[in-house]
Length: 239
Image (cartoon, rainbow, N blue to C red; front, side):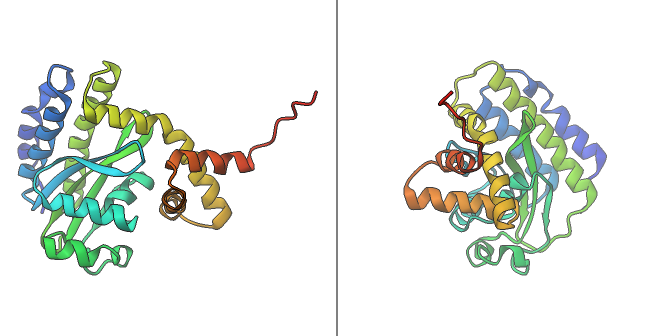
């Protein structure tokens, strides 16, 4: 459904003060997610950010249905929100029930009212560290005005998160995100190596790392370091 420019502008104007560190970051992020839900008129909206184990976690959601989507994606290792982050691109899903990419999560999320999903990556420091998404309980063709509107809310989220990180604001979500950022470059490099070695896309390569992490009960970043070490030139210390 096309979004009127005036409606979007009014919602964004109401959030203009959120680019400061005056408000607790969780409150600021929650207000952005709620405003997005009111503009889109969808079943729900949510914001997911990577945690220290590189798992997407909801930090703000307009309803509990988002939690079902979060858990289903974590367990299956696939989903539109995961794709938005790992592929660093906008993901549009008209109907989860019929989209072949998400057959593994459809039986879980469709009965709970997740049919159409729109996801936009959240970036900090040039890396995708989360996604903001909107979802509907009916099939939906997302148009360009909806994509642009969600990107506008995404821009506010990036400002709030970057401001909190720079000001070293003490908040659980910022601590979680700082851990994820500290290891993001290492994991992205390992994903690239696995993609080349096993002819996989970014999602498949990351799931290889994640599977090894679970099997060996190690952190994903530790598995990533091992992958990188296996292909890095060995330094001759005998001289």
